[in-house]
Amino acid sequence: MVNHDSGTSGNIILYDNDSAASGDVVMEIDEKGAGAFGMTVPGDGIIFDNGLYASLPANTSITVFIQLGGR
Image 1 (tube, helix red, strand yellow):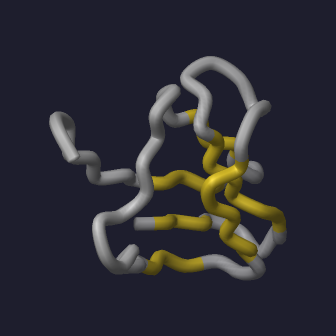
Image 2 (cartoon, helix red, strand yellow):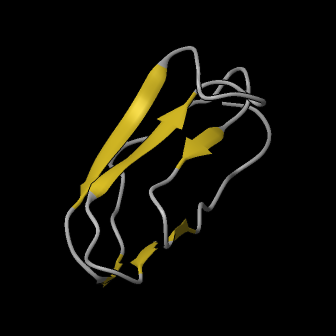
């Protein structure tokens, strides 16, 4: 789920890293306008072997649903 409270554009970037906006980019979402939307990642989803770090534009929030455990 993505919620963007203003019309400011930017990119939501998810990294395979638990502490910084660096390393492998595993997903990038172009955010251009205010509103909320959800998305479905097909198949087995995205695997974050090293943790998950999100870089967000101002006035943007995300909710990420995770499954812990084996593959």
